[in-house]
Amino acid sequence: MAYLSILLGALWLGILTSVSPCPLATNIAAVSYLSRRMNSRRMGMAGVLAYTLGRAIVYSLIGLVLMLGLAAAPQLSRTLQSAILPFIGPLLVLVALVLLGWLPMPPGFGFSSARTASRLAGLGLLGEFLMGMLFALSFCPVSAALFFGTLLPVGLASAVPLPVFAFYGIGTAAPVGLIALAIVLGASSTGKIMDHIQRWQPRLRAATAVVILLAGLWLIFQVCFNSGNSIP
Image (cartoon, rainbow, N blue to C red; front, side):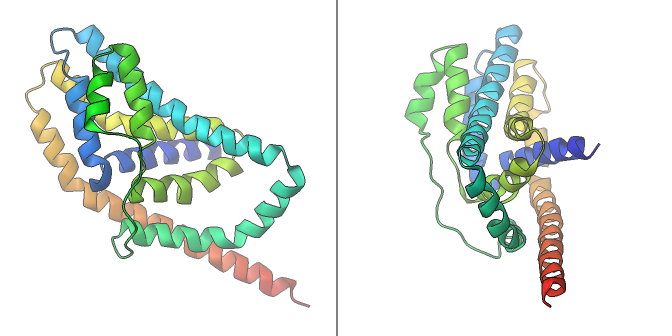
């Protein structure tokens, strides 16, 4: 049950990343590319699945690389875990401040461009798969804070880490895929759906920031309390 909660939390963080203002322009571009096959519902659905799979694989690979790096040096891994533990709480607090807009961060970084995405879109399902991978590598301040600051510590501490990263990738593709499918299937309320997402996004992000902030403060309290008990 606890592991299921972690997976659902990772899925939610991915969804929140997708509808945040920072990657919203990239996701709108992805919707336009994925929904261009309006004459074929089957190919439209297959394109959404390929895009989702590309994103999930990238985040899983990042997690796998980090896992293998830690597994290659068990003693270093244990040392780092004990050394990093006191910093997880403050890191979560910083992530919450970023989500609340109280702490500025440098511009995002990544590998996506409109020209490259347009070329990939012409390659069919393979291009849509590669486009998912490309857009997943384009981190912005919000996505970097959520992935490296919140998801990464939780994922690496889980019994089975890879599904945690995969669920995050699925979450980042879910709103894009649903809107693209709505367009392909001929839904007339697609614009209203996008308006509702943009309208509720600040509230959802603020609610998530509060939860992350409380978790960070709780971890800080636990570290300080345990440290206090360890003093003779």
